[in-house]
Length: 316
Image (cartoon, rainbow, N blue to C red; front, side, top):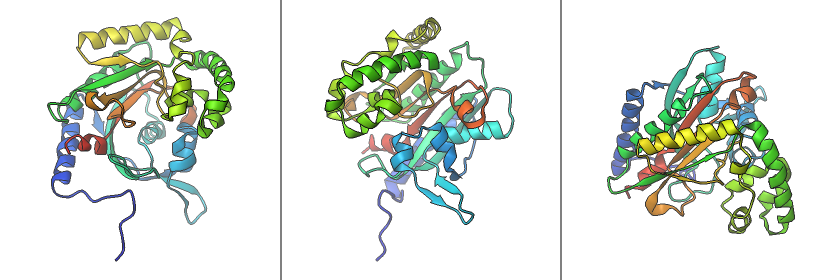
């Protein structure tokens, strides 16, 4: 008997039906918002993710399924969708605004547990190539996310958007100096992974779920005290739009997301009855830096990605 690969599964019966219901809803809501469907390659060059996601992120250092092809080139099974969408935009030399959505299987070598698999299903939407001085595209992604979840999770379930502004690159340079100093003073109480990140990317420590790290993080300097007036203005404008749309949100000053390419507005979405969970239903934000990392081009962009397997677990 040959066993299946750990962390993978076949979707059959009621599970397959839930998958189809959720993904069909994602198709319908995406089209109603004017997003264009894009089908991404399963195999990508490793450099696409080591450059964009971040050299010291868990995805790159621990989780990618990487291999060499017959010409000794470093390739991977795609671990996330955003970098591939941006690469396609740059490859095609597109210069105007585009809005895409995708539904794909992703691959990460994580510890399998409830709602988390090594081969998992992700649905995402991205807007890129717009004028940066507006928050309308960011608000559109939030509205879209809210509508999708309202139409795809059990009616008795409620959810909240955790939101934050992490400022622009100059804001974060100033913040990282003070954050690094604080973390160095408290390094004896940090986890091994966090100690490694103090000098490479201290903001990533704010994303840690380690119990000891959380105690240190709670008293760390807050990014909100370092962001520029323009970032504050956009953040406050966005909150007014969320209030007007009656979208449920909570400010979370430690929210930085787990990928290095984000800037300014970031968010994650959690079910209200499972706020202690490590796994959000989805998350995203602005990532103007990503196009520069991949193709040396300035490009305003914002997006969201949902864990379809995580959403499916809400029905069990």
